[in-house]
Image (cartoon, rainbow, N blue to C red; front, side, top):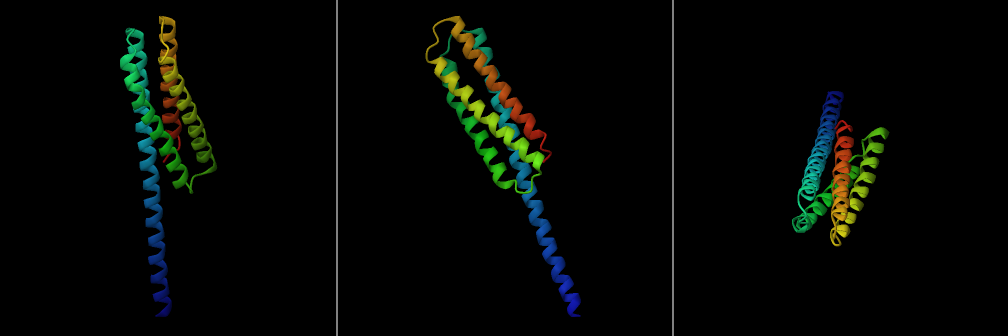
Length: 154
């Protein structure tokens, strides 16, 4: 009878551990999905900015959008940090991909900062094209993050 009691207790503990593991994986998957969505939004916004710069010489509207783009980039960095913190069960390959995403997010931030500084001194069509290329660079880095996180398989 005692061994039956111990077996029941062991099963209860095992069930609790499995439930906690499932919750952890669900949280990880949710964070990864938010990161993918945030990256996609950032990419789309950067491409819209690039298109605006291609069509119009007015950079005022683009200047207004930079703050929003910076918020998206900050959100991406935070979500990557959350994934790193929650991802104790990630494989070595997944950790490497997450590290790659973190580095790309840092580069994305540099592109946004460069674009912001360049917008302050746009005086010619050539300058505007340089800012547009920076916007395309932001979109490309956001897409890289999106694809890298998708490959994690969470």
